[in-house]
Image (cartoon, rainbow, N blue to C red; front, side, top):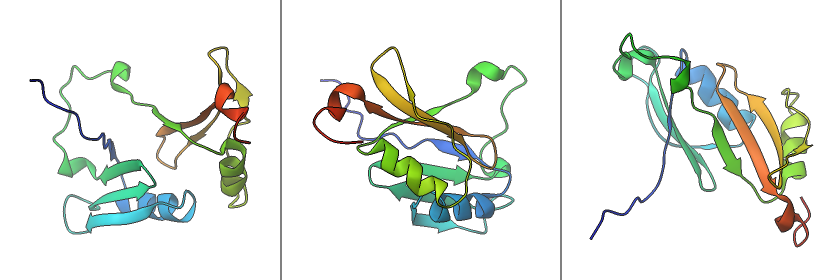
Length: 135
């Protein structure tokens, strides 16, 4: 019997965890699940919104990458949502810059934002799902 993957919780390395907490809570409506403000340079936190979970960690909390690290180690967070236009409007009302909603050749509508420290997040909705549920 093989092992079962239970959930994925990416860790974003942040220069200032406290500033990033404010962004994710105030702009993207995440909730703080757990936090340790006295570890690393600026702390550590676990946050969540619905089924989207992240951990935020300061650089000294996670071991430094080897010299072999490259741009190929970048991660883009790709998040499927139920109401794409509504989410984009919600973020725009907080005056945070987001990209336009675009139709992709692979059947999704998407918009992108870059958080204050440069982490890219793409929010998406499948066009077929849109026929049954307004985005």
